[in-house]
Image (cartoon, rainbow, N blue to C red; front, side, top):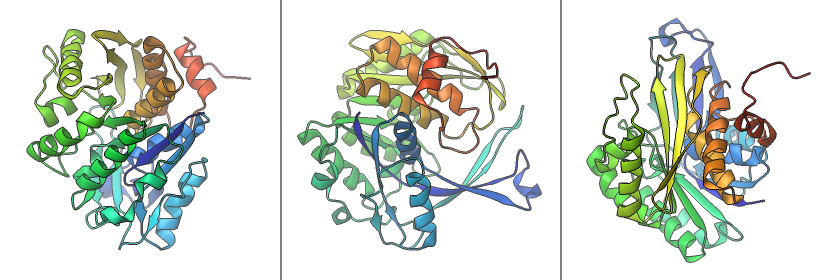
Length: 340
């Protein structure tokens, strides 16, 4: 069992029922989610010792977010209480040719206003094997870039593996800001995770022969992206998700894992999407589980992609599947037949 520490923001997610648009909604469903929190839940569901670290307001809403993690076995002992508010985001699920929409209401959240002294990283990393964060956390601004750097330095000094999902969010910062900050953090990262846009938006590294708007994907182009990321920052692994967007409802989904000049590609799945948000995080959770348990390169990318394929069929952000279910799909059982 691996002990994995995840650091970032958890928010309340509000979405209209089903596929209603914001302007149609008379009610909103509430759930809780965030890039690193989603990863922690995945890891806990696979039987890992998963811990989530953040700062939350000391009120009922902050406690609701904590309870949502505890429900699935995530360790919340490292969560700091204080600050003014819980961040919120709104999701309008797309369908067919209408894309999904996300609206953030997270400015001034407790974690965005966190201070370096809030987190005792030496204590947090006691007994830890792995540390995971995303580019969303430093993008929150304030002292968060330095807090992430503090965490990376401490983790590295203790021999803890570090993974980072670039997760560029243009509503939080510019490409120039992201490139500068992430460029300082990436030399500490052992496993870099990216999608079809992140490497280009953050570091100006483009996949030749690929067009995300038409769903055209070039495998050779992504090998080049992974090679450049690996050589520039010294990452042991670079993982890339490959999404071929047919529509908001139907996607082709695959992934690549690169190490030492060798690229392994997963099988490609045709997925009919129930809820896309959190799909990338479920890939990260699956990959961390596989690599931390000694999976070979091909098996690791197969597991990560199968895990994230299943997530696309589940409402809200958390990937509520078991290790057995992921292994079944990765092993070729993709019929979706009723289990009796």
